[in-house]
Length: 140
Image (cartoon, rainbow, N blue to C red):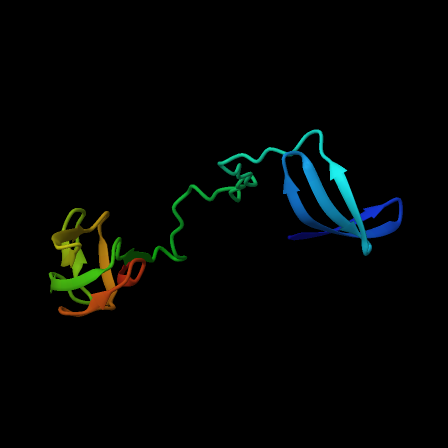
């Protein structure tokens, strides 16, 4: 039994479909019973069609953003555990210098410096667990 509410030209109709088989339906409209012959039934598709809105990226979203005054934040690319630190605050480092080793997804990953600079702060210690996006080291 299915219930429907129709509004036709400002008039409301409460419709209850009690029985439907072989093109014949027994319905009740606002309490009055009717037997109706159906010539064409609606066909349902097995797979629903999803319509999604177009995603609009803000202008400049594809560019890498750096913190003001030349501060670069090194973040964890994946969740993992810090295994070893190769730098401390105040260290002068060059491009491709080892910063830290961490384990993620049962693999050891070496994080290297992308540019020359000075280590401003180290936010983690060996043995710490980190999540994706956590700030590990800040350098200028």
